Amino acid sequence: MAMYGHLETIPRTGTGGHPRSYVRPGWLIRLFNPIVVARGQKAVLQVRGRTSGKLYKVPMDPPFEWNGNRYLVSPRGETHWARNLRAAGEADLRTRRGLEHIRVVELSGDEHDAVVKAYASTITCNCRQGFEMLPDPADHPAFRIEPPAA
Image (tube, rainbow, N blue to C red):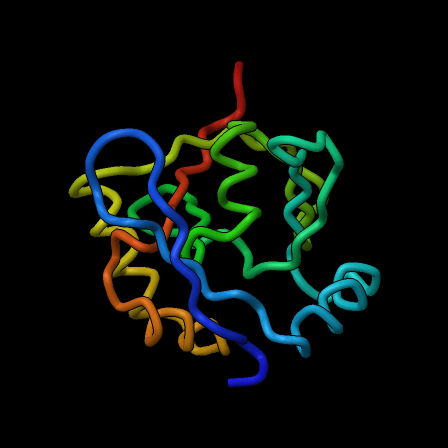
């Protein structure tokens, strides 16, 4: 459990819905994430902070491919990268394919639930702990990566 830390609840702003949940990263993840980013061992999402404007680099799994589309799903719930991506609507994604500027649309409803369930059934890494701590698909923001603008 040291890798994942503890569960927090973030009040939902706006109308309706349940509070958003977030699994705060443990000390081990906070220690190794900068090393993983520097070494280029994983895909890295580069997104602007929603209030600071600072560029954040977050290691993550490569986009989840399903039914001909690519998705980013937050296994730890309402993370800072998910909130920043929601606000920005775009980011840069560094993968083995190279650096790609992406535009995203946050999913909702049936599409959201189907993507989150499909993603959860495929993961084998320590991300699974996030789904064990947050079993409700509604707790996992999901974004569809839009095709590049023509």
